[in-house]
Amino acid sequence: MSSKWYPELVEIIEDSLIVYDTCSLLNVYRYSLVNSKRILEYFKKYEDNIWLPYQVKKEFNTNKHKVKSPNLYKNLDKSLITLVNNKHEELLVELSVYEKRGFSKFPELQDQLKSKFEEMNDIIKHFKQDIMDEIGVYKEFIEAADEYLDNLLGSDKVSEEISSVDLLEIIKEGELRYKYKIPPGYEDEGKEKGINKFGDLIIWKEIINKAINSDVVNIIFVTNDTKKDWFLKNSQNVIEEPRKELISEFKHYNNGKNVIIIPFQDFIEEVSDPSDPSRRELLLELRMSNLIKRLPFDAFMQLAENEIQSIDINDVVKKLIHSTSDADKIYINNIIEISTPTVENVILNPNGISIKESEIIYYINAVAECDFSTISSNSSILSYGSIHSDIVLNIELKRKLTEDEKTFIDKFKDNYSDFITIAHYTAETAKYIWGNDDDYDPNISIETYTTCPSCYCNISNINDAGDGFCINCSES
Image (cartoon, rainbow, N blue to C red):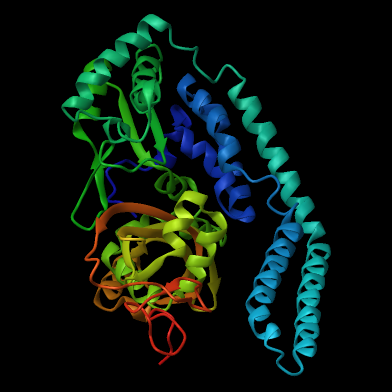
């Protein structure tokens, strides 16, 4: 939890105006079905106190289709069966090398494998049937959430659209504020384009104007945005308080009134009933993203570095051959050397939680952006390039249920490997990037004379392992 700079909200909420930012409203679609229902109930509970800036309505309508997943279950069987069939086809391609050489009992092996893949497809179809009731419940919830939010955003609880004259004034002021890092919104400058980069500032200006024209003394601004253009944080990345410039600006226009800027998860914790047994699971899921941000990023980089060493480069090259352009295939088919991969970046995507007996398991989808430096030879030219591949790691992060966040983070920093399990990983995408060409010494012969049966690259005297494979694929 953040350091508490705000009063007991339950004591003032009935006489306050509650303003949600766009992402707070979208939270109703982001989480597990059970917790999404709970979030919707909190919206309904304090509906009489809600007021929304027009900019929130605009952003919500633009982004809701990117967040909600109405067909999450609908095409589950088709998606999984397609994956199974694709893997079956890949396996048959691999085995074709042995089939051509007339290995005994090979047809029997093919039939057995075909049977197992058909069995997997049957399991998927039966699973879809087993969860039909859950699919119906999920669909009903999405429809209920859509109806509620559409009615809310279509009501008089939303402000009027800002006039073009006032909008131009905000944009001009925004350019100056962002130049000198005056909050809010400057953290979005490089992420959004055009007027959209001023979205936070527009919302802030609407809140100030609402306070000016309202008799309400307290405005509670609930935001899912915890970046440094809204909040001050300590060295442990824990929020200490809202930016003082924001409070000062609000007070300048609204003397005697208060604005309470609070993260969404802290707001839910404040207004929820401590005796409610479902409260803990909801708060744990809401706090997952911030918890992950507070863990040392270097640990995940190192984890990815360790894991990608076991990636089969042949799998990456095969994906590349099927997806690349004819022009790049010239370089790929003539690769004579591939270096050890390096991790350029890791993107962490929270993917839900589960509580099992005495521990919490956080599920994280980590995308490691990796580069494999390559050298290709063609005629008298050496071409230097790289293969960029996204390696997806499914991570399970375990924490004792009795541990507070600080204790867990400290232990994680000491030895992260005690808390992390890689459930599985796969190379998702691959792209060849040409770097530059060099002429090489014509006196040095690098004529290619065969291809590697594993990765299909050309073999020359430079990359010949001496066992029929290239040096990257040789097991000797």
